[in-house]
Length: 219
Image (cartoon, rainbow, N blue to C red):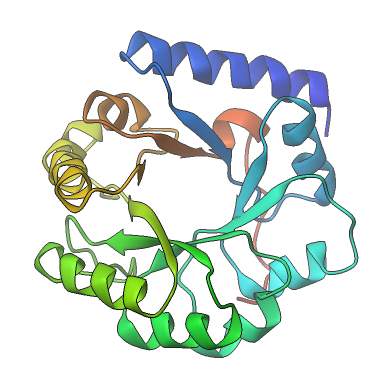
């Protein structure tokens, strides 16, 4: 992976964020299915962390690698995978149920987490219903986890505008709960997310190009 090419693409993403009105929005490169070279290229371009979706891929990619960057877990997480990830993941962005809170508190005391919100319920995406978020935040805090904020995934269909209402609701809830991170928006809908108050966008193809096929990937 060419680090200068990633840096150029990152500059384009930052221009998109600025044009949408963003002034302090982090870019989390999504490196699922890309090799470790993509992770280092993103770090060299100025990104302090990368995002990964699949537990087994995280272990195979990072377990034996000395790395100067953090690794965020942004995919649906099974409780039985937490132990494998405990020494690798720096932020768990997809915490969406009490059982996962309990497992994280047991295996990774004080872990930094985001609560994933299902702003627009779609099958297979995970997330806690908006009305249940305050209680889950309280449960996580009482368990000793560092709840930094909220995360949500925009809708698969309907175009970027279709995500606006959900993004707005998540940002309002983040403010009401006194949290500081609002992770929402990806390559196709980051402008809408930034306009609605995102503090972090998760971007893959805009930085690295077409994602490799997942034929050999075990989740």
